[in-house]
Image (cartoon, rainbow, N blue to C red; front, side, top):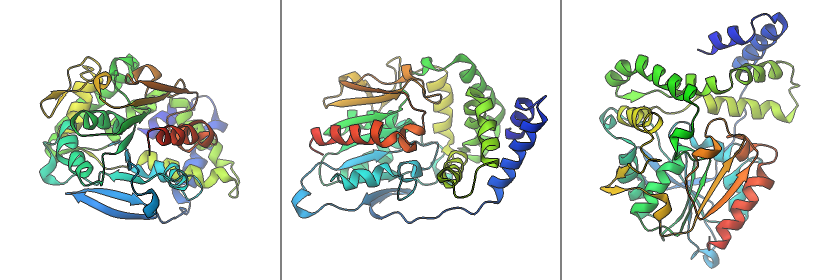
Length: 339
């Protein structure tokens, strides 16, 4: 898929094509930066782990824990990309008691676990293992999931970052591309019991195909001591890796979310309850961006407070302006909720 996009986007520009291929080759052969994450496993439910970042001192231990719920589509690493570029470590340094869900890899017996069951079977037991009702923070599809969890379990507050809720706000071309990719892949996914994240890549790449290729051409010319060098490697590995979704979750995401807008139309039922973010009994914050190509600004859920950014879907979490525009306002909001 990537090579076909590269060939199409560089047609008629031999220099651009050469640089894009050079950047791709350099990316493939580069040594990856490594770092340890300062976490402990606080609880687990099957394949899913609850990670605890740097527990608070006894004096601060009565604060509501802050529970981050990452997307199902990519690994949670974007929230802790490196020691000097980590939303989670920043929040720890500000005195918040930070936990994170790690969804793990679906096993053969998980094929019938739809997105609602990710909430009821996996997330709710982890919430119950926390010392107090948490402030939940959900990123991307993790925000959609966190909304359902907040409707079913005690929650001190809820913030979502770039979370899709109104799926009819997506461009029709993206929805069509994603559905076509699913139609081709569905028989194999049904047999495997999972939906590899690559099924969604074609749709995401179609949102900005030139940028998909151009960043590799830029990387071809980047000095190795440029701060962007290691950041590019970390981000591109994160974007192109990730655990598959269960077959049922993939089917629900494509057929019921992207195609039918079940959440945004008020028809998503989880644990026997219709999920309505506007009816949550806790303070809510929706953070979205006018420049987000992965989750359109208008796809955001309703909330009692909103923050609108001008950063990309990933840039709002790890970009050069992330600390000023997202990390610090989020920390202030968490503190205002007692976290």
